[in-house]
Length: 272
Image (tube, rainbow, N blue to C red; front, top):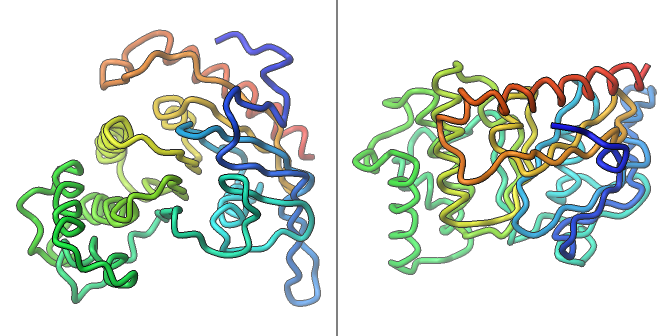
């Protein structure tokens, strides 16, 4: 994967109108009298339907940026827009999946997936049927009446992803959702996520520490430098879609991983 100077432009604009616009965003936290600059002058556009992964050193502001897009945090400076409107709080068209599935232990699998519907007052039978179809897409058909205590960590994460999709969001934000899982389960869930995304296209912003995961899933990888987090590079992934398990044995896959790792090493040095 040849990376040109143009590819590395921090604010590289995709050809379509942006679903997410991040303009000169900074975020400063004050904790116990100390100031922490989590993000500094970050700018980025993400197109509708694009799958973008954020990677970078620990503490570089990846999760902070995701929470700003989700409306869970406010920027200290700059603006964040979704579908052209400024983000001032959590949005109904946004689904969020975190590293921990945070399922309610006293609710069944299906009832956990349907929780956002209950909160929204959506009692339509077709919405509950959509929840069942999502569980089927995630490989959990037949587990609707099980409880979280009866499931593995990977199965719980599948439930959490189905829950994040049940309201048919146009934007899905994922903060290291597979980080705590073993490699085999992680690869399985990568496959499941791609399958769902290909059947129900939406804009995805995915935070990960895994370069191979980012390459396998993404249209584009945004590399961030060490704190204070900045957008160091924006790299298109030149691998065809649809993608299946066989891609992991393709030399082009490993070449892409090597190229991204080289840019990530640059980013680590740039933050010092």
